Length: 461
Image (spheres, rainbow, N blue to C red):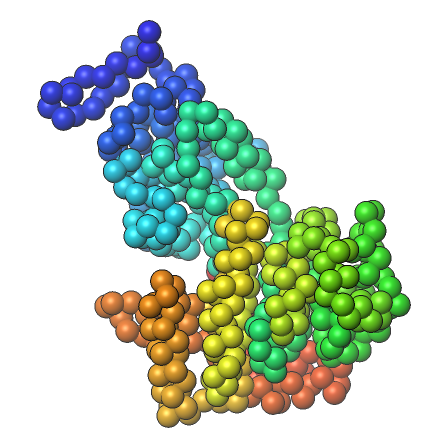
C-alpha cells in the first residue's frame, strides 16, 4: 500500500494523506503528480530534501527574509548551541522551490528567471553568510556556489528520478559539507595586449592587501610576463614536473612575492612557469602528456589553502589556455574599448570556448564574468562608439542563439537601459609599474583605487 493517498482530485486539488509520513525522497518522487503545485512540492518534497542534506527541523526557516524578498527556505547547522530557528542569523544555504508546472530544464525562460531570482536572494543584505543556493521543482535540481559576490553553478541542472535522487542528493550534500575555500579565476581573452597579466598581478595584490590569501599562476610559459612583472625567476622544470608526475604537487613550487616591506599584508604566492614548458613547441606533444583536467586536479590542495587563485592565461585557444579555463570556476575577460578584436574575441570565448569546457566538465562551470575595459580613460564619444560596436556583436550573437547582453551590459534591463561596463583607466601608468617589479596598487594611489573598485565590482560583497 502506498504511504500516500490522493484526495480532492475531483476539485483539482492535490493533497497527501498524513496517515503515514513521507519515508524517503524516492517515495515522494514516485507519488507526486506531474502537475504538483509549488505548495505541494514545498509541503512534501522540501522537508525530506533538507533532511537528506543534513538539516533538522530546528535548522530550517521557511520564508526567510533576505532583505530582497523572502526565499522559500533558509538553513544552517546548529553550532555551539546557536540554533538557527531561534537566532535566525547567518544562514548557510537557501532553497528556492517551484511547482512541477514550472519548467526548470536548462536554458528555458523559467529556468533563467529562477536563477535570477535565486541570485537576488543570495546577494541580499541578510544573506552575506550564505555559501550555497539550490533551486528545484522536484523534477530538476541545481546547486550554486556563492563566493563573495560571485555565484556560479556547482552542478549542472540535474533531472531527478526515483532511481537517481538518492545518489544525486548525496553528491550535493558532500559538496555543501566540504566546500572548497578558493574561487579559481582564469584571466583570459583570445586577443593579446589587453592587460591580462596586469589584471592578474594587481587583483592578486589588492585582494591580498584586503586580507585575502591569494595565489597567482603564470600559465603562459612562452611569455612568462607575470613572473617577469614581479621579478620572480623561472625554474628549469619545476612546473613541468609538478604537472607531469603523478605525485607532483603545485604547492611545493610556490614562490612568495614579497613587497620590500615588513607588512605581511603585502605578500602573495606565485607559481612561475619554467624553461621546460616554454621549450615544448608541439601542441600534439602537450596533448599526449596532459588531459584538460590536469591543472584542475593539481589544484585540489591549493583550493583549500587560498581564498583566490588567479591563472594568467595565454592569448590563444591552445593547451595552456584550455587547461587554465578548465581549472577555473569563473573566467574574467579584459577587453579594450578601442580594440574591436578584443571585444569580438571576448564574444567568441563566451559563445564557443567556455561552453566547450562546460560540456567537458559537466558541472556547469566555468562561467564568464562580464567584460571590463582595460585602457586609457574613455571620453563620452569613444564610449558611444564602443557601445555601438558591442550592440552589433550582441545582435549578431542573438541571431545565432546566444545571449551576450549580460556579459557586455550587466545592468541592462528592459526597464533600465544602462550600458554600464566596468573600467580600469590609466592603463599606461599601471602597466609602467612593471619596470619596478612591483604591483601598481602598492605604489600608485590611483591604481590602488581602480583595482579595489574592480575587486568590489566582481568579487567582494
